Image (tube, rainbow, N blue to C red):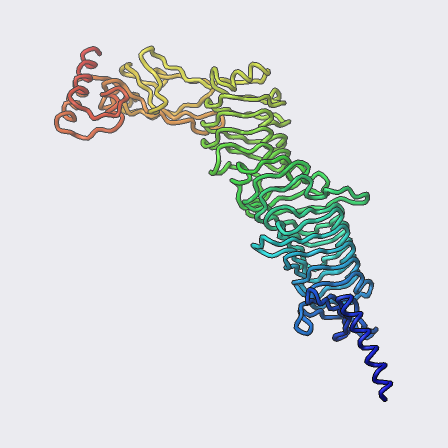
Length: 535
């Protein structure tokens, strides 16, 4: 008996010495084999003793009070097990660890430092998605090695990959051949998407400020490219670097909820719209664009090659249309500009079909924009930048112009009035003529069926598109009562206003003071007297 006990004790001491020297010992718990690391006081999953009767397994967060933090290489390779639970604090997944396994649970990597080795999830099936990183975390470091998710499947309608990009670094081919319904990437864009991925629904970028060069499909793959059909981009994006989408397949539809950010704040070195897709603003297809408030310079390449734009309105707050901003918008048939635009850069507005456009007088600089010579007609102002451009590049044009009939009259664009000393005008053409415009005038006075255009007459100017270019008020010097002449009646009115402070409208004040917004006083009264005497 003593001999048997000595043998057992010797064997136990030998095993203990082996365990102490290696710093690890194996144990089995509910069919899973673990190895304990006495240095880190953690368990590593190394395999299982399940038989054919077992089809699923549950990897617990802790065993004997110690965290389970690693899964050894090839631990469940080729078993086809259903994984019902996996700890979110795992720090290491070894090569081939879960090859061909089926995950019925969410797979989350929330540990500070995580390494996922090649083929760790090769042909794995994820029913409930994978999340890399944790919201608002700043000290995580998740490394996904080449081929880690090679040909992985995310088949369910609710399954997707969620990536907190500031925590995740990917090696080439990490996701080659993977199939996923949706991919959501938050924060910075350190996460690279390989060629070979098939993205069935859409890619969502939230809080991503810069998409780096070649972020999608950066690595060549001999059989396939990154397939991208829909991408959602929030208002945080400020730059898309070159070749970002150059290896993608499919027409990329873009969804945004902040059109001002898209129009003014993004630096486009590459633009997904150039790959043939549609642009949706708040889930509505953009065909008619009114440039929104929020900026005065349309970003270069913002709508380059966008084939679905049919009409464009450029409001008065826009100063610059940048390089290639509206290049090759071949279905753009209606373009409306407002005064205020100062610069159209080279190829900022370039198209291939004929149409009529009208350019504002405020435009100072026009870079070369090819194919303008096939315009049906360019309407522009005399001696304007558009006029000079049309003559330089043989663009057919018609001049807008307004001519005052009298040398003693002038147009005051600041106060939007036409000042004249002529008396008794019975037709607006006696005061002003136009070229390229349509004029509608409202007389200030009528007598016995005869209309007179004196102080207070309104002249509305319309361009060839029927849009208003402004409303001018006629001011006849000294004519306060609007009968188109300065006489004793106007002198009497000026005297009453000056002495009794009887109210006067702006047109009457201008008539007395010469388009100066001051009260009618004794000096103004004398102006009217002098005008009446000289009439």
